[in-house]
Length: 430
Image 1 (cartoon, one colour):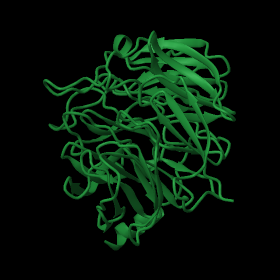
Image 2 (cartoon, helix red, strand yellow):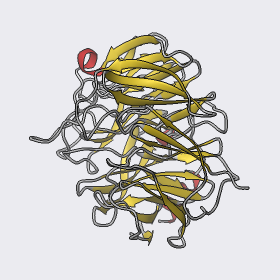
Image 3 (tube, one colour):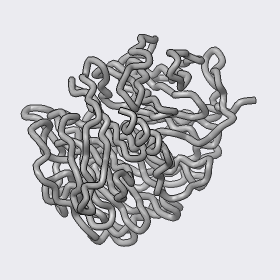
C-alpha cells in the first residue's frame, strides 16, 4: 500500500500536452485540457439571490444540446434550424451572429439534436455533425475546408442495444499537433488520426476483443490525452469500454471492459498522471485504472478499484478531479452530488439531495463546481472533500426540454446554452 501511495503522489504531476490557449479561452469540449476545469480566478465565490447578473442573451441558435467553445473573441456552437444542421459563430462581446454554415440535415427528433462541441485550432474549427461527418471550417468565415464521413470512410456505427435508440454522433474531435483524432469505434478503426490540414488518413487503430460487456461501435464520449506508463496515448470510452492507443502510430495499448454498458457509454474519462478514472451509467459503476510500462515498449492497465453503481455511476454530465477528489453527479439520471477520494475510492461525502432534478452537467472554476441540472437549475458547490456546501443557485429561463449542455466559464463569464438561446452571465468578483 505504501508503494502504491508513493506512486500515486508522483502521478500528480501535470500531463497536459494540448496546445497553449489564452487564459480566458475555452476552446474545446470540457475546456483547455478537456478536464472540465477553467484556469480562471477572481470569480464570484457565492451567487446573489437570483444568480449572477445576465450580461447578454443571444437567440437563433436552433435546437440541440451542444455546448459552446470560446476563443479569439468568438463563440462557436451547433444547432438544428428548420432547413438543416448548422455550425455558427457569435461575437464574444455581445452574442451577435457572425456567421452560420449548414453542415448537414436537421435531426428530425423533437427530443434530440446536435451535441458535439466545436474544437477551435487557430484559424480553423473542427466539428462532428449528428450523421458522423467530420468537418474542417474557417473560424473567421465558416467556409468549409474539407469533410470526411466516419461511417462511409471508416465503417463506423454507434453502439446500440437491440431495440434501443440510435442517438447518433456526439463526439467532440481532438486536435493534437498536426493531427485531428476521431472515433469510428469499430474493431479495425477504433480511432483514426487525420491530417488536420486536408483530412487525409495518417493511421487507424485496430483493437482486440475487450470483453463481454457493452455493445460494439462508438460511444458518446470524447478523446483525452495521457502519458500514462511513459507512452503518449489517446484514451477513449467506446462501446466496449475504455481503450488506450499509442499517439504516434495508433497501436492498440490496452483496454478495460468493466465500465461498459450496452446502451450508452457517455462520460469522458479523467486522466491523472499514470491513472485513468472512468465511469458510465445504466447501472454500471466506475473504476480507477493504473497504467504501467509492460516491459516491451507498451502499456498495461491494472484495475486499482471498482465502484459499484450504487456507490458511484455517472450517467452523463461529466466528472471533475480537484486536489485528490473526484466530484460528480452520481446515480442514473439523478445527478446527486458526491465526492470520492481518487486514491482509494472512499466516499468523502454524498450522495446529497438538493433542489436540482435529474442529471447534472458540471464544470469547475476558482474552487467552485458549477452544477447544471436537467430541470434548468444552476447550483454553485464548493470543491472540497470536507462536506457538501452550496454557495447560491438560480434557474435558467424558459427551460422546456432537458437542460443538458455543459456550463462554460471563460473570460469571467458563465455561458449556458439553452436550445435556441445562449445566456451569458457575469461571474467576475467585484
